[in-house]
Amino acid sequence: MVLKNIWGNCREEGYFRKKVYLDKKPKSAFVRIFADTGYELFLNGRFVAGVDEWCNTRDYNVRIFLKEGVNQIAVHGINHGGHRGMALELVADGETKAVTDAGWKAAPREYWGWMLESFEDAGWDAAVEPALWAAGEPQWWTRPGSDPERVVPTLDCSQFFRGSIPKGCDSPYWKAQEISGEPDADAAKLLGREYVCFTRSAHLPRVQKGYVTQCMAGAMPGDGSVEIPQTERFTGPEVMLDFHGETVGFFRMKVCSKGPVSFRLFYGETLDEACSEPSRDMCQNRMLHEEYRIFGGTQEFESRMRAAFRYVRVAFFDCQDKVEVSEFSVRTTLYPVARRGYFVCDDEEMNRLWEAGERTLHFCMQEYYLDGPKRDRFLWTGDARMEALINYYTFGDRALFEFCWEELAGMQRPDGGISSSGGEGCSVLWDYVAWYVIALHDYLLYTGNRDFCLKQRESMDRAVAFLTARAGEDGLIDVPPNPLGDLWMVELNAAVGRDPYLNRLYLKCLKAAGEMARQAGDTEAEKRYEYMAARTQDALRHLEETKDLTKIYDTTVHTQVQYELAERELETGNIQAMMDRIRKYWGGNAQLRLGLPS
Image (cartoon, rainbow, N blue to C red; front, side):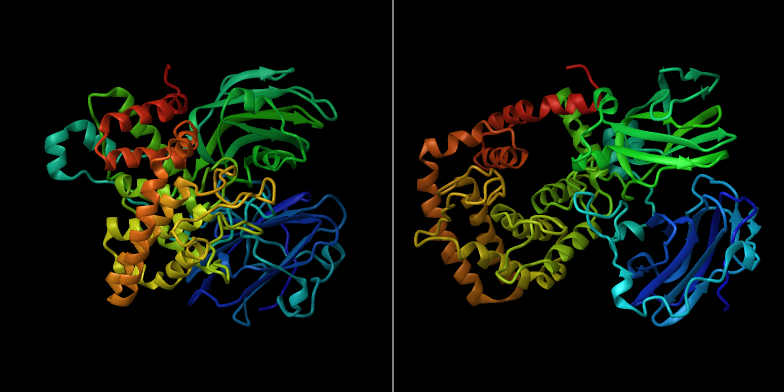
């Protein structure tokens, strides 16, 4: 293989594709890339990096993006003038697996899904190897990854820190195959056609259509399209789109113009949010706002960032010629699961709650259990425990939880504390450490897969020890005043002293650890945990009799606490109180989410 610069037949840009076969997933892999004057790099449909500057040769650690079998390399090359060319080399396990040459496919414009392995590029031209006067020599003589100091690491964290979405993690999300739901025969006889249709339906179509609801500041609606006759230097016409319900994925539109087109995308769950612009010093600005400049011609544009929204405001500016935009849609992304759980009763509000919960959970199932697909996009330990628990009733998936808990175990600290979330610089919340343990017990209860739980037993015991080290002689944890201001010690932040909420979770941890010891046949550990649980349970009973310590929790709107209180009411047989709590704290939210009248 001889490394060459390549380009297409359009001076301003080129889209390039190459399939590479790997016998196995590599233990190490690096890509070196250069393009005059910029590039966007995708591997197996996942955005790796984007650079638009003159000196842009980079080495990337890309092992996490590759897989055994066929791998798709896709590059958008950008040229603002002068020489043009793109060079790339992929090295896996010390061997060069791919270089740019005339064997690559090239296209002069963007096509929807062009970076995906499933895209059909048979109609694309062969890439051109430009003459030296047009492109110069390839930009390197050493091998990619040869200098560790110049390697850009995998960016696998949230937009709260750095990196992009999709994230570079080895999640089952990237390997899972689409599952078609099939109704249970006995349930179908009992529940009828509505149940059958439910199990076979999807929350979102593969591509979801958007509709123009408003043209502003000079945008002119047409027959299925919008015309932008002229724009200002920094502000210009705007188009508001409605997807008639929440969606998550990559925004698409067709853009036709003779010259370059600049536009901003503003995402919103509500119209007000789509019409606002968060301060640029807020992390949320990066999650609800994107800016692009694309070249002339007919472009089937797709955003590089996955977002969750209902409305999109497209604001055009600095366009040299008339612009026509049309075919607004979203390439949707959800973790593939079948709809196995079904609920219906004579209480319409409860039916709405089930529908909202099932739909919201699925939206949060992406590379891992996200606390929300719109903002944080974090794997928060406490949130993920509740999501996994709901999943057992709705979808019955195991793989995503197993991946999440292995990731969290890999971040466990020397003192046994479990990170409150997956990411850089995250704190340890005491109650989230408890949720980590409780979730493993949930998993055992609902799946019966003791082998996975026993593999996690060491990290589970260390997490319990983290909490036990903070318990007093009476078996209760006493939360000290927080010296760190807004950095939490427990989720409620303001909790100080013998917090009944935290100690109730601690008791659950001791019982869970005892059960896991029993599963492992460790009699000595089982008895030790039983003794500790009995001591804590007795002290907790007296603590919860002190009403002034618990009344604050009965009024908080925090989901985790309200769930605990509802579960407690269920355990004590107070069903009506549980139902009233569910209606009070979740009923209105479900109606808002589903767009239903209050």
